[in-house]
Picture 1 (cartoon, rainbow, N blue to C red):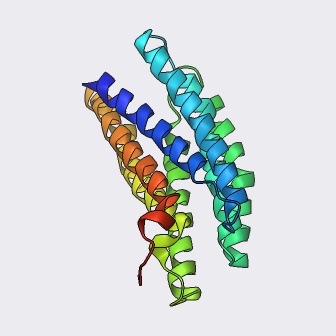
Picture 2 (cartoon, helix red, strand yellow):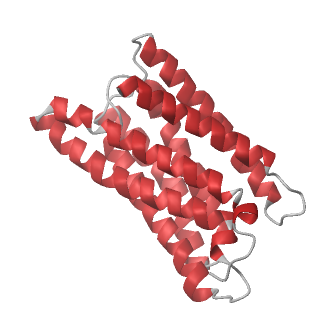
Picture 3 (cartoon, rainbow, N blue to C red):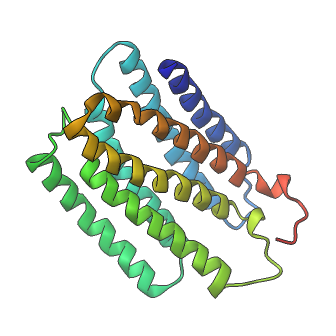
Length: 222
């Protein structure tokens, strides 16, 4: 069952990547960011495929995800830096991008060893800030820049933010629980990782919707 979920998860990332690449349109104002996003999803696919192969070979891959996931937080923060216009919010994002790598290094050097333990402490922290960035984006789009001529569901970054909000809200709860359960019930803690896989599948599915939404929702008033 777990292996089938992994296959589905990696396959979802690949499909999302193909949809993003096939929908790159220079006539769209966001096409440069779309190219960057396609590159980022491509790297994600390569990492997750490598992790899947290592899992099938019964090799430890914790170090691989300890290496990659901090860059995910920085990449999504950069994405929001390009989308949020509030100067105060942008300052907070820049500060996070400077401080988070330092906290991550302190954590893996002093508390959660890089090669043997997943960095749940700093992952929970990063998840919290992704929730904040997504919430700030929605507030910026819906409240500060309310525009009746612009449909949110035709905006790819709306769907990206929905995916990020769902995934990292779940991750914040799940990895917070894992931090606790690692001390009292290791087996139950391990079972929670399946929830993360399902949340990942949902997020990358929403990414795919995002970059094809201008075709799916050609006429909308919402």
